[in-house]
Image (cartoon, rainbow, N blue to C red):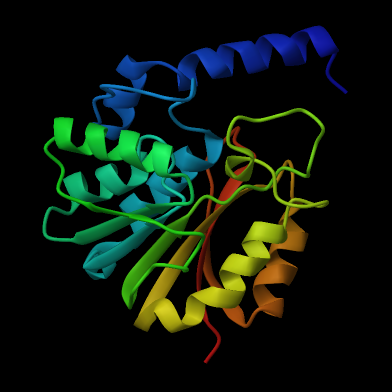
Length: 221
């Protein structure tokens, strides 16, 4: 086990990197004009970016960016990388959506924004759905937007709801890029949940020294 002091230093350095507007522009090509939360992205966003780079191809036609947060980093990145695509970014918090829309306009990125609790106000179908769900087990530490981080007693509540609702919103042959930090939800448990909800894993995208994974999944049959 790492000493607490080293863990604290690691987290502090990581948070410094994740809050950097310059680094965000270098990695994602997105200029941050205004932010509500301190962090611009997380370890799972980095892995999902790699999955977008390696897995999208012709799937980048109608794309749903679920849980886009205050910057819609992945939605903007997808639209910049695939200008011909139609991207819809969704979040449950209107304040986060408004800030994301402002940043998209400042970056001259034409994507649509919808306030929705998962698929509540969403229309489909989509060729690809990208989601970096909350996966931290419920904690007593308050968050300004709790549903951006916490997800039930074991961190899987939102993931389960998402997988249970997604199939009708996927076009034939469509895929889901599901990002999960396996530090919080073990890898084998994620695989079991994916199988439980009737999906097959086509690929698992990872990066060195990163505990997050991007599961490329499709409905089973």
